[in-house]
Amino acid sequence: MKGKIKIGIVEDEMIISETIAMALKELGYLIVGVVGTYNEAVKMIESTTPDLLLLDINLGTKKDGIDLAFEIKRRFGTPIIFLTGNSDATTISRAKKVNPLAFLVKPFSRNDLFSAIEIGWNNFNANASKLSIAPKHIVLKVGTIFEKITIDEIIYLKNDQHYFNILLTSGKNIVVRYSTKKIITLLPTKQFVIANRSYIINVQQVIKIDVDSVLVGSIQIAISKKVRKELLDKI
Image 1 (cartoon, rainbow, N blue to C red):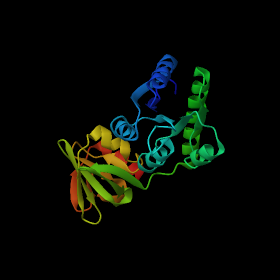
Image 2 (cartoon, helix red, strand yellow):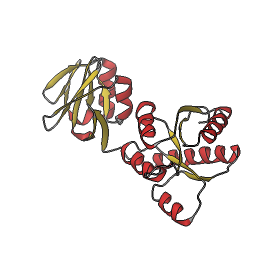
Image 3 (tube, one colour):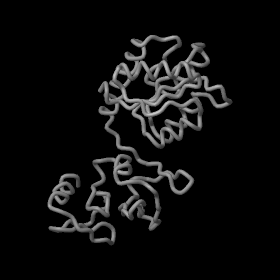
Image 4 (tube, helix red, strand yellow):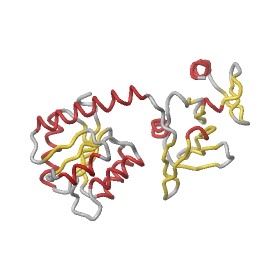
């Protein structure tokens, strides 16, 4: 995985963050963002979707890195490696509740950093593979707020240029501004299929599959032979 893991750094001390960034580059990792505050970290994750986050516990604000870690886990599920100069029992006890991949106490070496990332990332993926549990919700930005949407309630997503209209089983329609490339990464691949340029459909909501179309909810959607085969494989 080395060289492909996208890493975000949240560290309020510039010299330390630059040193870490340099070490990561030398080790072949991809750095997607280096920030120093709670709010900057949230914005960085929203815009870059890192695979892994290196997070300093002491951010010099009322809300520290552990508070931020709980928010990240709740909204994004991004795995975390904590960085800290404090190894006291209270700090470690709080940090453990977030289930970080590792806990690096400053000062640490480049080898310490490399080992924590490689072992932590490997264990994270091994556990995810064992559980193989699909997420029940996704969190999407709707206007200026974030909304939690139950995945099973999505009937389809209709592409309208720079927007998607998401129809739910309740009849509610949610409009979000996402690209197809971005939104498809947020949906479980076993449950959703790109039917054509206009529609992404929930296979659990499929009522009937014809030779060149599929009935989803009350909408008949045109599909290719390739998509038809993919749907039959997933249903």
